[in-house]
Image 1 (cartoon, rainbow, N blue to C red):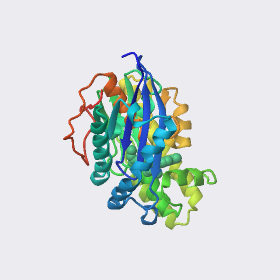
Image 2: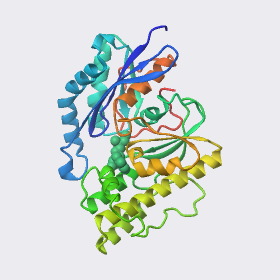
Image 3: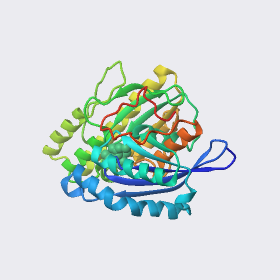
Image 4: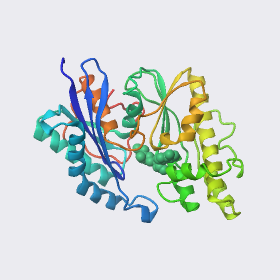
Length: 337
Ligand code: KG4
Ligand code: ZN
């Protein structure tokens, strides 16, 4: 292949309608040309995502978001060489919207279609643009996931640790709601934390003394509830919780990196946008790679990057019979590598 190829990616796994376009150069370098996201606000009044409302809003928005992405990239549909869409994990009704849309588009354009794993997309969001070579560790921290993978070779994922209860982002969201800071909680906690004292509320480190590399946030959540009842201010609660959560995430990941002899760590997913987390990882001495701007939280460009990896590897396109799946493990089930 001597010409650059352009790949469209769609993610509608939860409450963001994401459409992105990336360019794959003949040598394998990738570049994000467009990344348009419609973040649904309808859920704010419920303090969490309402699946049926999410599906309906994806249907209403996806056409416009696609047109926005094409405009941003300065392209037309006929300029696309492949289409990728998330098939799971996620909310099935929401996933179906983007998946069916992507399949239909690929078929109409006569280009290959690739289904993508949402978590692999999050990892590619950081790894691809940095042109990262394996081996590396990948920490995916989002509203639905807290997973630590070892990636010894392209497309090979070994689960090293995972949360035993809440996901990291979920804990940010729940504690923000408790403190009356709004939804989504991650950015709200991070903003309030700037005005709070991180030492004001004592949080015990979760899973202290564990030999493995798992995560747990339910203890921090309970401690936050008790502190809130005892009169901790939202700012102090935010600052203390954020510091405890960041310390725990970084410490566990660094232990795993040492154990496995890895020097490079990818940190991705919505919580990877957290400035305190980025700063703490920056002090570890490891080579830590974060997604570029707009690529932390759910987006279509990360799925286009997964599609680009598939195209680059000459992977067989996915059959158009592929369905949406609520739960699908990534470990040892690489779809695109
Ligand atoms: O990756 P994402 O968009 O969706 C899932 O796949 O779950 O992640 C959303 C999560 C939410 O829980 C949100 O509160 C969290 O990422 N988040 C943050 C920040 N920005 C978003 N958490 C901490 N600090 C942030 N700055
Ligand atoms: Zn996600």
